[in-house]
Every structure is written in structure tokens, then in C-alpha cells.
Length: 169
Image 1 (cartoon, rainbow, N blue to C red):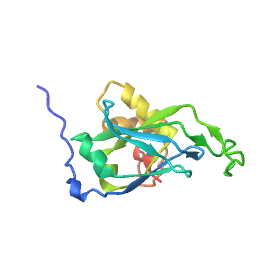
Image 2: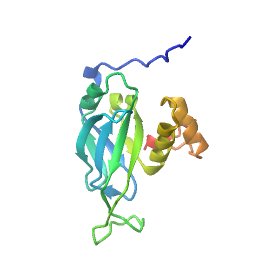
Image 3: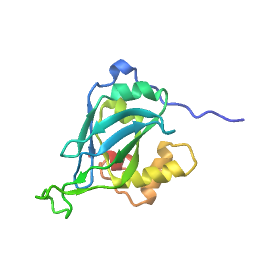
Image 4: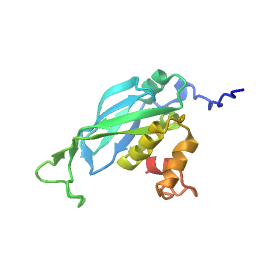
């Protein structure tokens, strides 16, 4: 007998904020290309480009409306300009260097529903890739265990180590 996994309650769309933000972190990297996708690769929202400070604004209602009942979304990040190539905290006077790689970050639906700012970074991308390639369904437990096994600390200071530590400010 297969017991279905219970799905979390879904927030009514009218309770979801119409504006949210995210920070794409590494450098900072300006002008990333950002695409929100389902776990199966269906594009939910595209043509989003980060600002010069590495942040984006987006409408979570549009993405959630396209997600159906999915619990997670994949944020695909590519391109951009590394504006601090020597990582000294000062923008490069020459404008920086083009980034030629990409990464995917799994974001829980709850981040979109709450309008909470998330941080997408290569470490969250590494954990996401491990989870996506595992062949197992994406769950909080799978992501949390991968984060713990990679040595993530309690970054958000909530008293525990979880995948959310990588997404929090």
C-alpha cells in the first residue's frame, strides 16, 4: 500500500504579496538572468534580470499561479557580470568580468507565499543539485540533511541547522 505524502496547506492567492525580492549572491554579480521553473523544468516566469547590486524584484503571485500544487520551485541563474573579481568588497573600476556558468537553487513555496526575501548562492545551488540528482522526491528533510552533511551552520540563528540557513539573510 502506498501512502500519499501529505501536502502542506496552500495559501490562497489573494493572500500572497504582489511584490517580493531576492538577492543573487556571489561577488556581487550584476545582471544575472533568472528563470523560475517547476521541478520538471516547466518555465513559470522568465526574462527577470538582476539589478547592478545583484537583487531582483518579482511578483510571487504570477509564479505561484503557474506552480499548481508544487511545493518547491527551481530558480535557474545564469550569466551576469562579477563586479568584484578580487572579492575585496570594492567594485572593480573596469566594470568586472563576465560570468560564464549557471546554477539552480530550490526554493520552498512558502518563501514565495510569504514574500520573504531569499538569497540564491552557489552553496544553496550545490545542495539543490545534490537533492535534484538524488532521484528522491524533493522534501524539506532531504534538503535539510544535505545542508547538514555539507557543514552548513545555523546562519539564521533559529537554533537549528537546515536548508533555510542558506536562503536566509
